[in-house]
Image 1: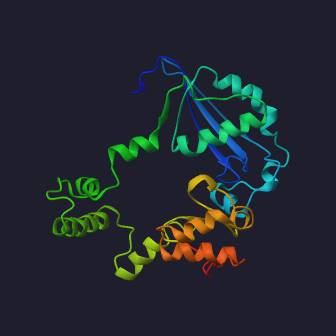
Image 2: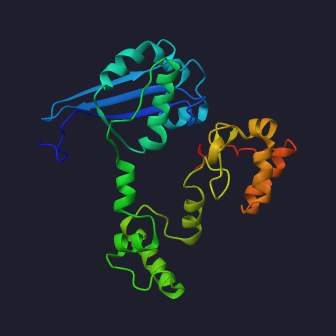
Image 3: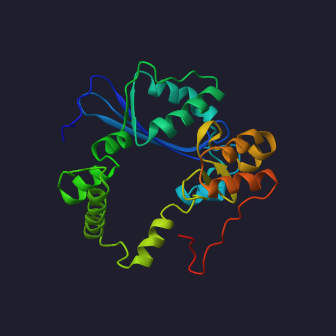
Length: 269
């Protein structure tokens, strides 16, 4: 099949699985690269890697890779030269790669002594395309689920009526959604069990809480409380929800959220 994307140089579609989300402290445990040559020829490769640090249980629960699975695998440094050369001259593509995969890969290359850069490469992020084509606004949702343009957007009456229509459209499009208010509310609450607070400022990484925004994203809350307490004090005096401020103030006195254990059916979802 002739590819719809016209290429004038190779493009490397890649995806990374890792020990976590912080490029400074986390490591890659698996990388897959699909290299497509102008004309349509493609080559695919997958490598598992020994990160040199334990893989947190929360990360393993996501990608299914455990310490024992990579115990005998090479390190990133072992494959860095070959991978660097393999990606040379390639544009890049992936899903959410600009905020995760590229920073993680760049950091790993730097630790191995290679200056990997996206400069002079075209970077295509399918996630960004998705967000542009289906904007996550009420107007965008109304168009997608209801097939109509929203007249009077940002007027309270129009927005509330449209929201109800969107909700009906979601229920029609996704029959697997709960059909009762309690079930649907629970679905909304638990759509991301790794989030500590409703506004997603903190998230779980295993049994540890990490910062999920700003310059300290990916750092453990305990680490920030001990070494960067000014950041938590800034949260407390800024315009954050009370829930977020409570987590910050508790951390300053050594009190941290405790993750609820899985329920009897074997899941916390």
